[in-house]
Amino acid sequence: MMDAVKLAIAGGILLAGSLVAVALGALPLRELAAVADRVAPILAFVVAISVVAELATRAGVFDVAASWLARLSRGRTWLLWLSVAGLSVVTTAFLSLDTTAVLLTPVVVAVARANGLPPLPFALTTIWLANTGSLFLPISNLTNLLAADRMPGGGPTAFATLMAPSAVAAVLTTVLVLGVVHRRSLGGRYVVSDSPRIADRVQLVGSSVIVVAVLPLLVSGLPPWIPAAGAALALTALFAWRAPRALSPRLIPWSLLVFAAGLFAAVAAAETLGSGRWIAAVAGTGSETADVWRMAAAGLTAANAVDNLPAYLLLESTAHDTGRLPALLIGVNAGPLITPWASLATLLWHDRLRAVGVEVSWGRFAVWGLVAAPVIVAASVAALVWL
Image (cartoon, helix red, strand yellow):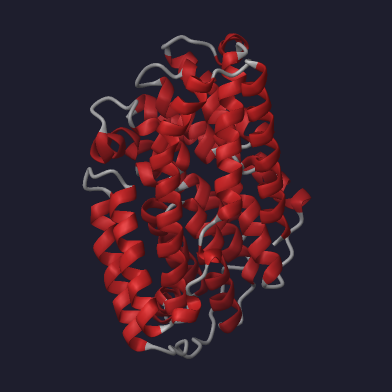
């Protein structure tokens, strides 16, 4: 998994640079400690939900769900595609965009191939909706977890209420654009394949129950890492009983953790060096409608330039009200569809596609994104401003 290795190396370099900044006095140790205190629960959630998603996948939860959708669609390609889109949105909303990109993508590719359909439209649907569908809940994206405490009212309900119009607009626009781009591939019918073979039905049922049980707890108002950790422990116990060989340190997304930690530290160093002044000059600071649009555009541009997580962190200081903060999230969540590095999920998605023999041209990906990203972000901002 070369993309994952590159992420870990990049994160290690950023962490090393931040430690040098501390040693030279450019980054006060208390600032680094404050950043660590803020992001520790977020990274704990990432670890726990990754374990949940990985073990649920190994139990066959996603395979069975996708196969069930294929049967429910009764051989109609467009209906199966819409079902996959819906599954991608639900998975992203509750289990995060990385789960959709890394774990759901190989499943939908396998389902497409099993039913004699081209895999690319289904694979592209998962990654676009992993990004654009990550506006619904705090747990859907790391950027949301960072922004949640700054939302008026706090908590997942307040977040979801504020972001709902934009989230729905982003998903509907994404589906519309994808439907137009792949309209020829999505016509016609297919012969429904047999259901996947399940090696351990007890493991499948137990894993399904745990996943279904944890979903409402993730939006209950508890710190998300707590129910996620509980589900991870429950699944670990189940697998220790039924399939202990599946348990290994590789369940933890080490490369993502190292990269995220390095980004947080590097942005803290940049802020102490006065990055806020030039960021404000780019993104503005006003609260008028035009300023909201400018904020979203800045988020889209920065995400595709440097990755959406550092883009959010750099621009966060300028997102000081209920219009600018959602606009920033729209830009950095729904906008990173152009460059490969705009979202960590995109890099991990591409790595998984190569592993299952599906090649995607980055040039083609960028052209589609250049058309889609501004349209999707504009529709989402319009919903934020006018609804």
